View 1 (tube, rainbow, N blue to C red):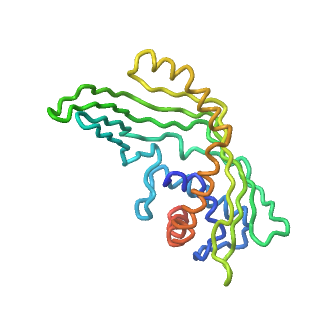
View 2: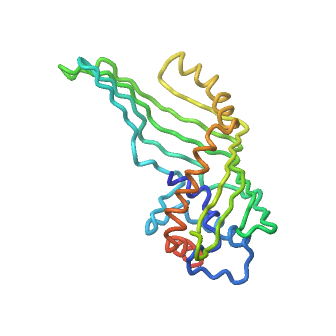
View 3: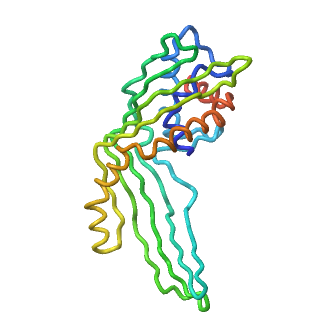
Length: 242
């Protein structure tokens, strides 16, 4: 989820309890300033506030699942993962639609020309008694999303005595024009995945099947790790202004 917090850094809005000089700027100008700053910072990262380099983003955790079946065990996993393309977004829309709303409400559209994920997969079957590996296979795995957009609306509450500052709502819709998927070292199966995996992934993204998970997840992550820790916002802006 750490990389998703960066995708939507613009939503830490209005300096929420942080000592950031707005200097008469509008809500939109403040948001865009934070977006521009985040885009600059995440390329090389800012370790003092826990932001790793994102060009590429190395995923330190490996994912492994082992199934013990008595006389043998099965291990599957993905490791050495990284993502490319994250910092190179373009803000195509940031419209204040608050009207008479008490809190800032914005429609947004963020565009990436390309974003990709790469890693190594493994599949191992081991005989429990001898430790011999009956099957030990693996290879490259990855996907690429071309012309990807994150779009939707967010509502951000300002500090008040009877209200906690942060996101009230965040809607997120994903769309990609084309996808490519590869799962190598599986013979004819790999060829089938390359042929059919891209269109299938594109359809999954464009059906909004992930939005009910990602939207609330991003909202809660920002409220906890950014809005709830305004010193990180100050450090981010200060680094850009140096």
